[in-house]
Length: 281
Image (cartoon, rainbow, N blue to C red; front, side, top):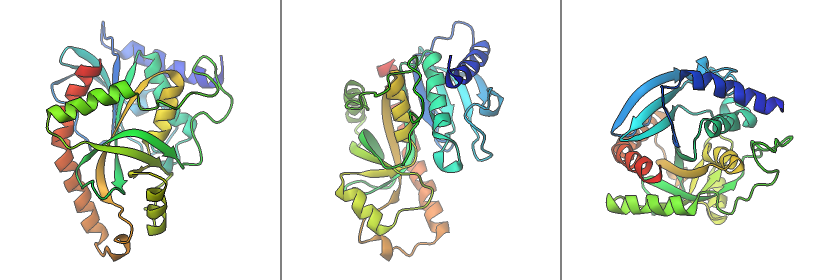
């Protein structure tokens, strides 16, 4: 057994001992700390990331989160409330570690939500983007290094990275709820600095709709180990070329806009997550 898989199994065995009796999750949800949990949720048990050996995903004082064992309606679900960010110094292999642990806990489908800036002028602050493809400009990914064939093949097929069947079902849910569907190509960059106007123009020219720091690495690990992946993003920053340099808003004002975007999106997100869990489980 490789060192990578040994660490994964250490986390898995520790978590299985903490799982509620007869808990059988098929769906996982990965959220930022500021995001509200799905509706119709009964929390059965919570485990702090810091209490999951061996250092659940590397070590970063800036990473705080909770793994939640819960029931959404009749479905058992694992929720990761708090995200490991590459820009905080977390190694890509450790970002992938989280996904592989979910795989060995029984997760078949992962619904992951982060926040992004948007390049598409048809999008608006506080909206929710549905990711159907991505461009990796992070300069790294969780698969670099020796491959463990028990986790997945050396060269995973990324042609259906954001499972088309799951994507279609989530689109139908948005239509049923009369929510705007912001179909998006996600460009992943390392962060944490904000984008220059030239970068925003370049990302637009290569076909991106949103810019973020999280989903791409997680998605690659999920595809590698056979987890169906649904990507959503709360839109918190405008990155419209030719307007960025004219933007004179202060950092305090930008923080306020971010909070307002979360507030606007959280209500819809809470309900759509509940329906997505029930539809995809």
